[in-house]
Image (tube, rainbow, N blue to C red; front, side):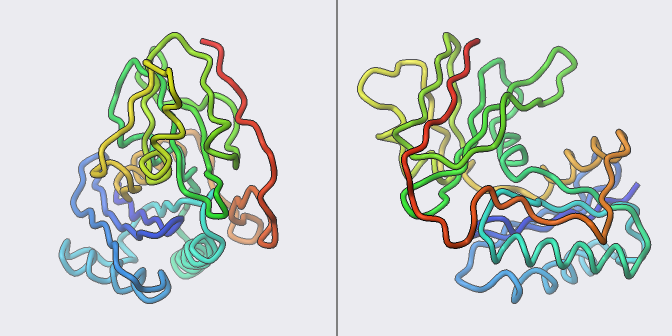
Length: 234
C-alpha cells in the first residue's frame, strides 16, 4: 500500500511517501514561506523523486491539529482535495501524537509540547502499551508552560519546539525525572504521520471529506488565561 502523508500544523511543513511501512521519501521544510506556497510543490517533488503519481496513492494522511489556524486549514483543504480528486481513503492524525514518535520507543512517559503562541503551548501525554503501540494519556490541551506538572515516578521525555523554548520553566527547580529532547527532535515528520495513519486505516478510522475539520483547541480570538495541565498519576 502506498501512503502519502503531510503535515502543516506548525511552522514547518513535511511530506512523505511510504510503501507499506517502508519510507520511500521524507522531507522536512523549514523556510519562511506560507504553507500554501510549499505544500503542493513538495508533494509534486515527492512524486517526481519516487516516480509515483498521486493517482497511484492508496491512502492519504494529514495532521488535523492542534496547531496554527492557517496551517491546519491549508492541510485540511489539501487533504479534502485529494480525497475528492482521487476517491481514495484518508485519515486524520493528531499532530501531538505524530510529534511523540520522535522520542522513539521508550518506557518513559512522552509529553509532546508545541508552541501555541500567546505564551501558551499545546501539550499531551503518551506512552507505549504492551503491544508496542503508542497510546495517548488524557486529552490534548492548551496550557501555560508553568502549569505542566506531571505527577509521575517515571521519567517524562518532553519533545517538541515548545519543550525546547520553555525548557527552563518545564524543568522548574526540582524535577529530576524530566528529560528535554534535542533540537533535532522538535518538528513533526510526515513519515510519522504516515505510520500513525496506516494504523488508523487498519482500524477503519477514515475521514468523511464533507464532515471533517481541523482540531483547533481554542478560538482564533482567544486570549491567554490561567489554565492547568492535568497531572498524570502513574
